[in-house]
Image (cartoon, rainbow over all chains, first blue to last red; front, side):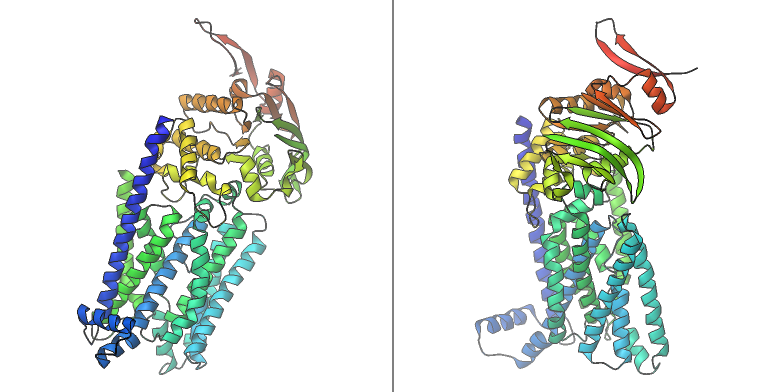
Length: 351
Length: 260
């Protein structure tokens, strides 16, 4: 029993360290938000930002119309969108990695991104407005995953569902990508094609408050159950049979998680285009920082993903005079960063 | 508590891999399951654990059909110790053991302080508290096996089902694990384990089930059914079974293959 007593403070100490790390991540997030508020064609000072927010919160009259407009109508919606999408994609990616027992899984694994891309590309081809693009993107993203799930369930009746799902997801993803190519091929090369191409590269420039309201519901419907179920993802990452004997109805929970991750990914891609890498590298980074336990990993991924996405978006619009598509930037930042993480992970394992 | 199999036939779909299996194990008993590779031990295990539905016959837990229990109810009664394998993520041993508490938690909850205390008690019972903070993927196979057993104990089950608990373990660790299993049985745990080594049955078994390579089976109290003749039928080898006495007077029953 003595061992038990000495073991207790160790868990306590780890918990205290985790809390400190969360606080630190929170501070970083706030700093990134301030940086994003300040950066842009119209530069703002931190003092001006805080003052404007303060006045707004306390209901004082607007002191400076320009600052007010820049902050509340231009930057805040965009910042909010980046935070939500960064957090959403990271949580979805982390959950998929657990469910598919593979640290290489990303939120587009079952074809959600490819489906949403096709939906959006079709909507642009058909000259629909933003709402049309969002709805088509969201709907097709879900359709792609439903297709994957249905085909995989038929094939793997009673067998290894995880592997079949991954393979079917690859097939469905490739199929929808081919349809995207057809859409681009038939699109008018002078008007529609550039719009589709730019849209698929991803970006937050065209995001309005309406877009955010559109994706808020599916995003929250996806994120909240994932956060609530996060302990069970630990069990799932040991495989279906072990999860089952630990008291987790693996198939049902996995289906819930897939539904949630699909809601998240489809709504993100429908609104902001394809923003790759975030859902893959952020869970990795969070795992290195906070450990593998999903109880901590999922909230940590949300914080880190939000901060990362906003930082990259701020760089995308602040670095050059013209804005870079964010999908390109996340790939340029993401690929070497991922190699760095792999090297670091290897060193840790050798140690 | 009692776990019974009545004329069980198990397999995938309609294809029977193993059939006519009957046994019963009560709390405080150890059933050792022996049989050649590919004879369907794993299939039988999966059926006992509820991962496969029986094609014929029933599995009864305390007289009630296993299929009528929920996943969570079952996990509170029967814990499974799989062969140690490496999960894809660097969980600490403490987190792995705490996973055993899952069945006792609400669907949306995570382990609380009391659960971590139970996890630590399980590790202490096996003498592996020192592993708590270590990364599970980086400890030795023997240590992983101990953590898997600790996880099952944290589940606070009435029955332990162990799949070759001694495979991948060195000589010393095998003996350690067997002695722990004996200790748990003496405290009233019901145990079902598979093994490839008849000696393990001599060490632990209060009942033995030997599956022969034609799919038929022999069962009996103690380890009486482990005879030369039965082993020949199961494995097609000649064996030497007898008692070994060393100069200090220690005496064990053992089995060794004979070569011609």
